[in-house]
Length: 232
Image 1 (cartoon, rainbow, N blue to C red):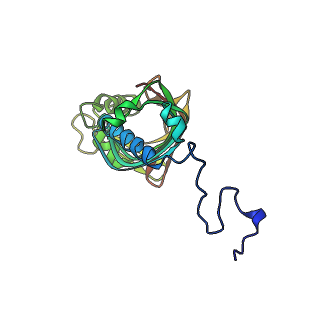
Image 2 (image 1 turned 135 degrees about the horizontal axis):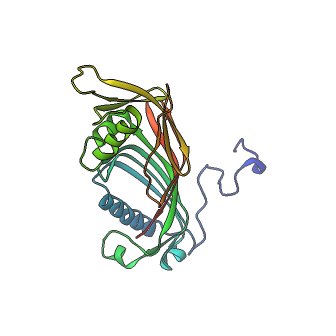
Image 3 (image 1 turned 90 degrees about the vertical axis):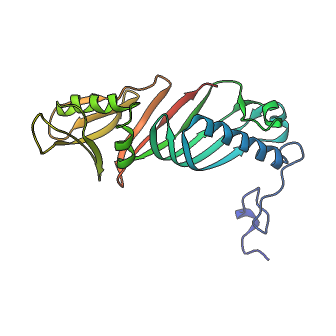
């Protein structure tokens, strides 16, 4: 006999702790959801240069999937490289997505029908940011930050120390780098960087389809939280 009173048990829980099966045509779509999850993973891997690990949880039913509708997606990925930017961890969620089921039957990446919005958080390590800003794709951003905040260019390095970002560059002829501590915060949909010891302040250029709602440095990681509009 269970020690848990019926009144305290979640409505979808059985006495043995397992979830009840969904009604036919509504949630009895395990193989279809698994196929769709595989299609979404293929699509995601096509968008990125590398993904070490990815977990995808889908919300939907067989009937709605047949109509090309997925009720929601929860995604978590680690060690992602997207457009030459190294991301330590990604946690995303989105609501309804319109999908084209025909591509799944041909074992192809899922085809998305309409733009959709995603909400979530991305985390960056100092080493990952440092490597990313040294690539051709992002070097101009790093040099621009050094110019705005240090008055020097190019950027010689970046690291995270507790709740501060440290930027460094070399003045002409100097052997010792100039290094300054920078604080971050979300502002006007992007990330504002301000030197701890003075007035220099700048904002990151941001894709119009992305809005940053929270930015913080913690546990030697940079965490950004916000939303983005994704187009097929």
